[in-house]
Image (cartoon, rainbow, N blue to C red; front, side, top):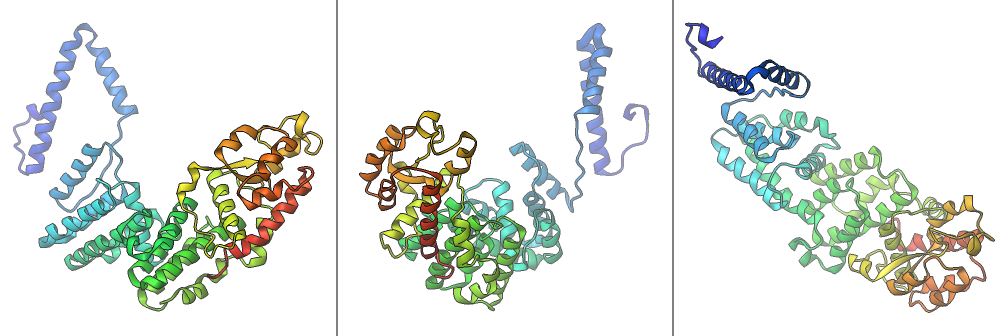
Length: 421
């Protein structure tokens, strides 16, 4: 014990340990005194707490300033240490005399993304940024990979400053109202909003590289193409797998190297993961879409397609407050109204088929939701949406009617979301 030895600590760190020990010893003594005759029980409770619930994490850092930064971050946020935390402190340790430059660039990157600390979003940004330079990297390998490439003071400065520039472009990917899109025109803005609605991240390293290297005309063409490729991938399936991300990241690397300079050249690099017209049409004819926001987007785009609009795949978010999805075979179908054509055990197979869905203004939709088809027909026929009115031409709503309607929608979908714009 510290009080029983005459050996004085030599190192500063040893003095800190001894001071901490003396403080802890005093606290334990006070805890014991306050417990009175129950002192032994109280101390045993603390022992049990330390053994069963306290977790110790060992972090090796290059300097005391790094250790302080980690401690400060964890205390301020009350959160687990992220990969971005580790990377920040590694970079600060490599910055040397340029610490102020690296730190300022890092903090400006956070500010650009409108976050105050190295959270999950910042880690995702780092991974997408790095993958756009070196190919797809898993989150668990990100710190090691960056550490292998950033080894000097100059490396640290270059990395931090480039990261700051990339953060502005990444913020544009995340926000359709970002200043970047103001001069790009309405279609580019709406394309980005559509991509956000599709909720896919695999394309972000590719878009990030393109925003930093493609001219504006090519960026507009690329963003529209990614919308159509994404829809095809969602309908056919497999877009959430690692193959799509790897392919996009490989293409992003080629953009940064100057080997790919146009959307047409890019398509040649990634065409193997973009479903063909036949694959897309076949999958669309059978698609079930339980997610209402996604179903609404598909139907609005198809409606714009049948109306002959030039860019039917562009659908801004604002329509969601006025337009709703009507499940013609209702989600709570009754045996009395629907049992003649749909057995109870097969209704689930058809409710979320796109062929069973139609667009309606919110007012009428609220009045006809669970009614029989004969009662829905007049409301459907009075709709301003062409595809909705077509439903009302059916005599009865049957499984065959749903299949036929969806086959027609699938044929239309090929032109609404073309494989290459």
